[in-house]
Length: 95
Image (spheres, rainbow, N blue to C red):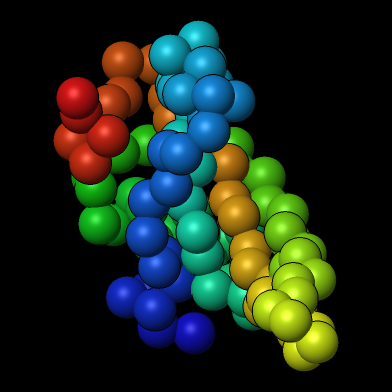
């Protein structure tokens, strides 16, 4: 997998992500579904010039939705929690 295809977008939309960012220097990204932890680590380190200590990933299951009689399912997507080393900061999440 190419490095530029691993990270889809940074995601700081939840209170949990904001608290992890403040307390543990952990940042949340939406990544490609077939990306591994190693791929995510290499991509973040190369794009943002930071030292990654830990990467945790999970697959967020798509919700079932309904419009009238029609039922459909939103697609699954993958989330990565990336913890940086001491003193490391990402400019993407600066407020």
